[in-house]
Length: 180
Image (cartoon, rainbow, N blue to C red; front, top):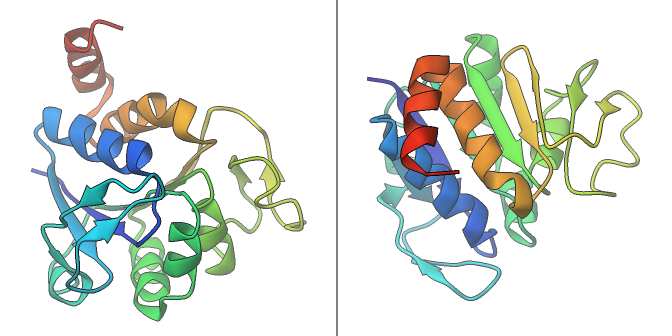
């Protein structure tokens, strides 16, 4: 069974976070949600999320993928946390998946993981990044880096994560049950 870490920062976008967690779990992928501290996470729309654990505890395990929900100021908090940068670099160096949606691709960018890559994000978030080909597409997969544009693309993003880990057949199975 694949193991995925979803860090949850104060001010994250709840639609993205919950969609990612829900779709991956429907695919029988083990998802660990981790708050940057031990507090409940108040998302950007004031929904309160209770992480499975805190990030320090979560980082004791190994993961096949790390997925960053976007939203502001959530993505800012992720970007300013050295532990997040370290796990992203560890994942990239191990040729494992890193993924981010909405404002969170800026976290991948600041870690250097988007250099020379194609990516997408919420409009204007990476406009100053000249080392990345920003496509504006709903979901972009470039090697082991997966990015998505925003809350409206969260379902497609999450299904792409399933396909990247478990294959097209599993994605199709999960998607069929969603009656899309």
